Image (cartoon, rainbow, N blue to C red; front, side):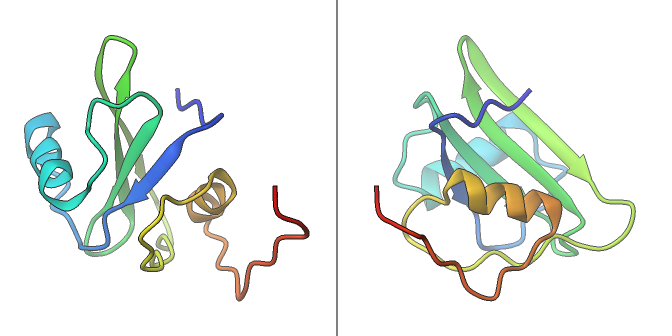
Length: 109
């Protein structure tokens, strides 16, 4: 189960062959992201070319875990290019298929 309390969520912006397992996805994390794979609270999101499947690789308390979601209809929205991690709200919208035109925060924390 995903616990997204204070998670840092990183999205891979290139299409990934989701037949890859722990080793293949770990190699992509090592070459594409600055964040270390084994850092607690970091989630790495991968989408396939058709954007109807998603894998999330993350470090659980005692090992790596993969979370997988396959859509029966539709596709995940194309993630926007960003250098900073995605926040929890944006990630939930990605999972639910919501495509915001613009995001406005009422106030800064």
